[in-house]
Amino acid sequence: GESVGLHLPTLSVQEGDNSIINCAYSNSASDYFIWYKQESGKGPQFIIDIRSNMDKRQGQRVTVLLNKTVKHLSLQIAATQPGDSAVYFCAESNAGNNRKLIWGLGTSLAVNP
Amino acid sequence: DGGITQSPKYLFRKEGQNVTLSCEQNLNHDAMYWYRQDPGQGLRLIYYSQIVNDFQKGDIAEGYSVSREKKESFPLTVTSAQKNPTAFYLCASSPLGTSGTETQYFGPGTRLLVL
Image (cartoon, rainbow over all chains, first blue to last red; front, side):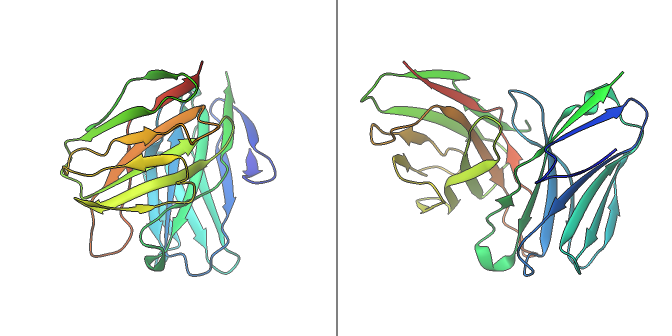
């Protein structure tokens, strides 16, 4: 399944499928990007980050892709599990904004068993 | 939630009352942040501090105040001037590195409700 964070805030996938959550960022000067997972009633948890000198970074079952040309960021989750159900936020920052993170609105991921 | 604690988990405020939300971290992080999250929304920055005895306003500082007397602690006061305080409040901390923005780590949050 695939979504665009700002236009399709809910993504529903089948357990075991791969998920792709997309995020469009606005500031071409942004040089740091980060993905967080937030479960209901809890604080956001760090998933993975990437700096602008890279276009891909992999973690455990997750991959972040950065396309600076079109200012697009995506989070890929392999073999999605019920425990992956949460809201996923992307955030961007640049050295000129005093380390403040600019947050996206979030995408809700629902995993169907 | 790492080494960041927030208390209480739920807080009730009466009209005209000031309330203070606690945030403590034992990660030896220099920077600390307060965010507000409304239902179905992203995070909005209220205040942040990069060093003891210094802090800066975020995007929605009106009706809030903070202090940073100790590196480990960054309490947030929601004053009576904040007319719509019902929200989920999140505290975060991060180290200050030489490479630029560093990862922020979040506490479990405090849900503030108005009676």
